[in-house]
Length: 255
Image (cartoon, rainbow, N blue to C red; front, side, top):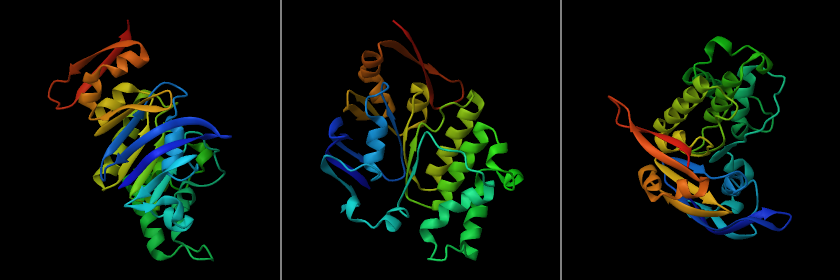
């Protein structure tokens, strides 16, 4: 669906990522992992057309992403950054922002837009707080509101930059379940995660980066068995089967 070919990119003409060749499959969850500063966020920004590459191309279904008008692209690709200002706005109104790519010049939501927003709020379980101001919410609740906004945007591809950072473990697990729900709705999810266990246990594919390059891009099991995570992070790891579950959990510890 979306493909990066021979990408080099960075800031002020300084390369942060290089030799990037990767494609994200439709209806899957891909987690991008790696040490701080290895280029994970830069990869997402280039893939979503927020950062122009120094060289190479990004295509969506074979069409060059830079040639797609911004409003049309906003109907195809959503990007949720890690760091955001907290607006003085209600939950319902923030989720409505996801419909802006579909509104006409007057920016007046139509019946369909309101129905889509209501459905997004319902899917995220936010009905009881939809009239509250964002400032009144916990970190976990805010993240669910932003994900509801992304859902209301109704794009096929969703980029998430560290969606569970700064959340307690309960809210981390809740957000990961929400992301799985987005996949079930047919969305293609590409996210940066710091938590290696979460990346390996909830993804269809894992992209491990180091020093601006992709080291391995494969299934979680193959990435784990490659030993590259242990090498790059300088840790030891093991798999832990969970009774009654098909998925495995992963434990990491210092050598």
